Length: 366
Image 1 (cartoon, rainbow, N blue to C red):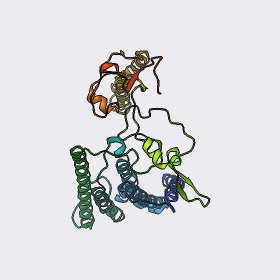
Image 2 (tube, rainbow, N blue to C red):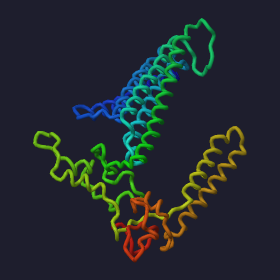
Image 3 (cartoon, helix red, strand yellow):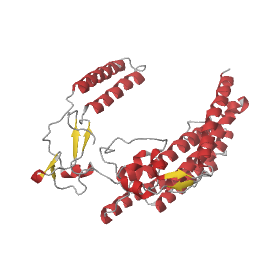
Image 4 (tube, rainbow, N blue to C red):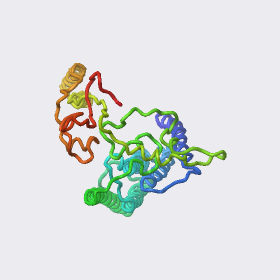
């Protein structure tokens, strides 16, 4: 009965999975694709996730499911889905948003070496598990007797895991080299290096602490894209006349006399997060030792107290709080990191860009 129920649920899971895959393919269909490292990892995600989905569909056939359950075939299936569907996506996101987060663009040549090592190593590691599973190798074993016929494919899998590790080494080398090169040559990154669609690319790179000087007015899905492009009568993409002006607007930072209103800094959120961890720890391990439920109670108590304290915390900071010039530079207020001593005021009475915190009545986003 359980096998039947599992087989039926597998059939149902295949439907939304197929929808996702065709959605991704349809997004790329007839598009003008640029195969940057981020795009390669995205395509790798779709490919590996699809293979994992196809191997999962076989479990909807009861005889197959009986043979494959608790074998290395299952290990192969969920690694193609979880590793292929998550890790490839994470690296796609890292390469794509790295300029926006750190103000540096990772080297594309090393990035592509990283991708191909990862793709080859991934398939060398986990594809043989399908064969091992069908040959009867059980899950959750770390050794096996000679003469079972599993030696060769396990060796191939081991080689593949080292290739994945080599790909990770290339990634970390890329990060290190990129950081050194940008600092040595004082390189900067434009706000929208990918000619992207979403609103975060309308802010400087790296993003200042205040994000937007003014709350953006959104008039369409992918509004940033529609500020730069339109479609002609045949539906073909066409660059707008003020494209360069729009791109340049993304580089704007706070000007003298402007201020941006931010919430006051607080330690309570991280204390609350730690309290949630304590509470969940007690829930997970409470069965093995009832005393662990006391940890849950402690975590809930700390969380409640934290929320109350956070709500009662003063919403403003002293107006004369000094600002570290280096910290000021990181916040996006003074690119050179000099010349500002206090929030909103400079030497000689000159107005300076300012970050204000709390709920002061005469300051807000301008």
